Amino acid sequence: MEMQSEGRIHFTKMTGSGNDFIIIDNRGGAIDADNCRDLVSRACRRKLSVGADGLILIENDPEVDFKWRFFNADGGEAEMCGNGARCAARFAHLQGIVSKPFMAFRTLAGIIEAEIREEKVKIRVTEPHSQELDLCLDAEGQTHCLHFINTGVPHVVIFQDKAAGLESADVFHLGRTFRHHPRFQPAGSNVNFAFVQDPHHVSVRTYERGVEDETLACGTGSIATALLASAKGLASSPVHVATRSGETLTIHFEAFSNQGAMQFRKIYLEGDAKVVYVAELWDETLRQ
Image 1 (tube, helix red, strand yellow):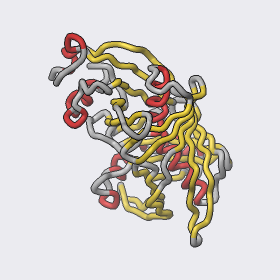
Image 2 (cartoon, one colour; image 1 turned 45 degrees about the vertical axis):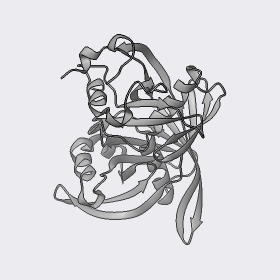
Image 3 (cartoon, helix red, strand yellow; image 1 turned 30 degrees about the vertical axis):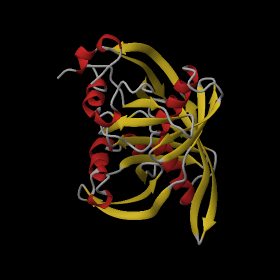
Image 4 (tube, helix red, strand yellow; image 1 turned 90 degrees about the horizontal axis):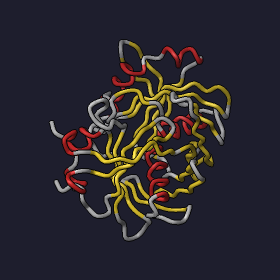
């Protein structure tokens, strides 16, 4: 694999509300995006390498400002990541890839529009699909009532009756169980545990596939939670989502009824996208 100067990869580490990412300007094609699974998984290892929830490659696109290739920490490519999209947009602006504060870029989930507001980034995401309410599934010897929607990637949402229930939720084990549940195969699903404080404030904990653990935040999971809370009559736009990082994501959307079912359009995700540092990744940390 060809790398940048002397076997080193220049990158920017960014964080979006607790999700952290390695972002690389790959417009020159130094990294083979179709064969970089090992590079991604090794670079994303915590304590042994840079460490991140995912890695993003910025590449050329003939129709929009740029395209990205997004990879989860396990090296698998994913369709979409809300917090990663916000970081990618600010990275492109800071690097001069896109000079204007408004941009559009291609993901596997579709075209994402973004607006840069200093350290905050607001993105318009693609419309969700595959919404299912009130699914009753067995796991860990109990029947659980949950809901499903695809907001660029698949998400299960399990609402908790009390704030204490959210704090005590077994996010890792139960999240992993539903992530691999036969009902959501072959793609699997992210799993969110949520408590609705009032119609405009929700708290969320998320088990993310690809990371295979609870993360400090999840943009598409926050969107899924806000939309499903609205579909259940528990929330309305805007919804401020408190994440485990202590930061808040804001979800804006329009809800409308279509043949008796609640659907959504004009969906936006807003929050901080911050630079942590700029550095070079040496090839020696990518060796087995």
